[in-house]
Length: 326
Image 1 (cartoon, one colour):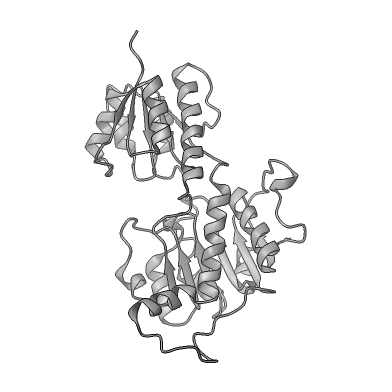
Image 2 (cartoon, rainbow, N blue to C red; image 1 turned 120 degrees about the vertical axis):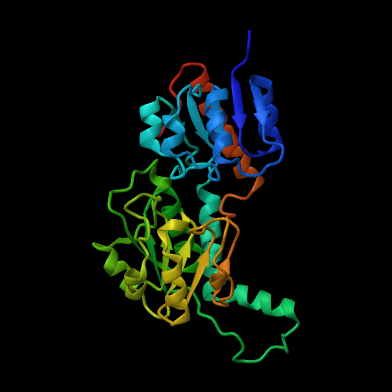
């Protein structure tokens, strides 16, 4: 009996690749570079399922072609803004994701970016490597303590709430949040700090926060949510943190805001034109830049793979996958 054909678009942890090879006829991407649009189109015609990642952009044109064989796109990650979901539905291709398992690591990186920007740790590390440090002095590279400061969380899902708990418990920050919908809790331990305050408008949050951290999905509504107008609503001493999706921030507007002192700094793990990072951002000392490391731990990448495997096995067995999004 022939085994289902699965195309895996990027290299995954060895344990996950071994498990895939045991169950399916797997075609791995040995080069571990992003597949072209043509290769992605062929994958939909050659495989029973495609295990894809955020670097694979599936457009309406991919799903409009004839001869699609794939029953599902099994996404390795939570965000699915790289997939045209409406077109996938119309073509009868299911889409799944891997929620929950990456919450803690992403929140940890957001917390790290808060400390790196407020305490100027990124600037200090870069200065030391240049050999320009001349020794300790009382007024050298002064930053700001997060204790008692206000963290404004935009989007209060699992990751936003996990960051809120960390910032409140570890850094002594006051937490306020804004989201267009009520959060869906998995249980009492999934809630934010008890005294976190929900503000009525995004404008209020931006004007009253020392740190603004983005945790909303990438949608048509959130594209360039943080544009020039919204950045001007922030305080001149405030910093912006983004571990969500790059296109939520208008990066050209962010560069201008940083150059002109509209805001004090930024900590970014995702980028509007990823993997390209604007040279103007790289040149700004008050910006901390990470190469999309929010889920970069062995434990989480294996857990994401296991979640993807559960979705994949269910789809190919004719069962309902646990994490279907389309």
